Length: 98
Length: 498
Picture 1 (tube, each protein chain N blue to C red):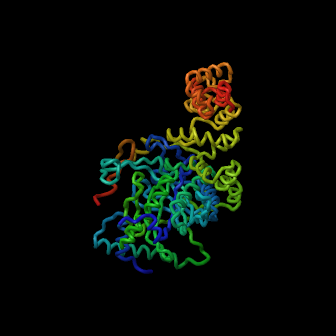
Picture 2: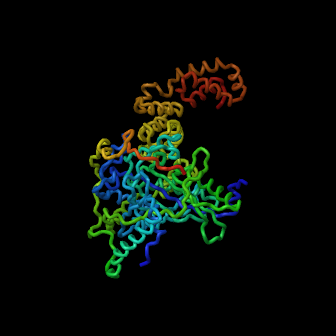
Picture 3: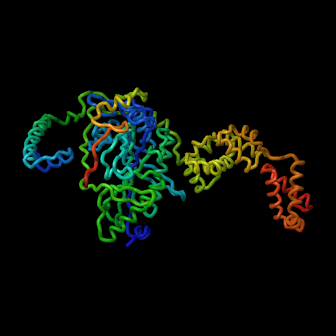
C-alpha cells in the first residue's frame, strides 16, 4: 500500500473545512496511513468468489408505501437549532469575504 | 470584438450536455413520510429523517422508485438489475445531513435516448447517459445583503420543507452534430422531456414552479477535432425559452473568448432572464470531490424483471407519436401543432373533442380566447376555471346557431368570471342571437335611415359598403343579431342582389 501523503491530508482537510498546521499534517498523515493500512488487511483475504458489499444485511428492495406520516411541528423541528429566525434554521454567513 | 452567433458557428462545433432535475409528484418525500405538498409555513414538513437527526433511518419511497423506472423505460434506458444509493458529501447548509442521498456509479436507468421533433418536423435523437434517483434540497433565505443575494449576506435562514422531495436527474450524453440548431435542439429536448414526464403522470413538471430545472453544459470545438473543448455549466435555466437563449449566448461567448486567444475556464455560470446572457459563478479549481460512498443506511434496489416488464406494458403512448397522430386527425400543420404544444393546449383540446366538439372548434377556442385569457392572468391553460365540457357546450351553441363568435366569447368570459355554466351565462346575460325578424327588421331600417350616404353607395352597386350597415345593426343589437341574416335583409331592402 502506498502511504498517505501530506498533500492528500491537506486535500481532505480542505474538503472537511479543517485548518491544519504543518505539524498536524505530518502527524495525521502517519496516523491515517496506519488506519488505512489496518483496513487494507481485508483485501488480503478477499477473493474473486467474495463479492464486494456495502451492506452487512442480505436484503434488497426495502420500501415503504407512499403514505403521509405526521411531521414534527416547526417548534419541535427547531428545538435543537442553535439559532433560529423567522421559523427557520439560522446559519452563519455562508460565503466569506472572497 | 464581438463575435456573432453566425460567425461562431462558422468556426466551431457546439457540444452540449443537458442535466434536468424533475421533482416527482409523490405524496411523500423520497426517504421519509413527510408530505411534499409545499406549504408556506417554514419547517412544518420535516421529521428526524429529513432533518438528519442522529439515529433516524431513511426508507425508500416505493412510488419514487416506480416513477424512476417509468422515466427510464420511456427514455429507452436499460433498467439496473441492482443498484445502490450513495452519499454525496458537501458543505452547504441546504441539506441538514451534510450530504445529499443520490446515486453515483449505479444509476437505476442508463443508456437510453429520446427522439425530439424540431419545428420543421425533423427528428433529432438525443442520447441519454443516465437517470438516477436523489432528493431535493431545502430553501435558503440570505439576510443582510442586497436583494437576498448570498454575496454580502450576514447570515442565512433555512427552511427544510423541500429537503428530501424525490428528484430524478436525467443526464444526456454529449450532444454533437446539432450545429447551428443546437439552441433549438436543447429547447426541443427539454420540451419533449417535459411532455414525457407529464404523460407518465409522475410529475406536473412545471418549470415556472421549479418542478423541472435544467443545467446547460456547453463547449465548442473545431470541426473534426477529437477532443471536446472546456465546458461551462450554466445552472438553473428554468424556462424553455431560457434554455434556448442560454445555449445561444454561451456559444457566442465561448467563440469570443477562443477567437481572442483566451481559454475557457471550467466554471458554473448564472443565466439572467433580463439580458439573456450568463455571468460567472463559482470557478471550479479542481474536479468536485464529493467523496461519494455507498449509503450504509439504505439497502440496494433490485427491481425484478417482472416488475420492470409490468411497468413497461403500462407506459402510455409517447407524446411525440401521439402528437403526430392527433395532428393528422385534426388536419393541421406541424407548425400549428407546435403552437398547440407550446400553449399546453393538447390535453384541453382532446378533452373538448371527447366532450363532443369538433376538432377545429375546440382548437379555435382554446388557442384563441382562452389562451389569451391564460396569458393575461398568468396561469396554465389547463388551470383556467372552465372545463372542456363547458367549452364543448359553447361550441355546440355556436354550431346550432344560438350564438355567434362574438357572443360565444362573452359567454366564455362569463364562465371564466365564475358566473356559472355556459347556459346559465347565456340566460343571465341575455346572450342569444336575435332571430326575431321583426326586431331585426327594425334595426335594419334604422341603420339604413341613419346612414343614407352608405345606403346610396350600396344601391349604386358598391355591395361591399353594406358591411358598414351590418356593423350598425350589430351595434344596435349589442352584437346579438345574426350578421348573415342582417346582411341579407339590408341587401333586400336596398334592392340589390347579394
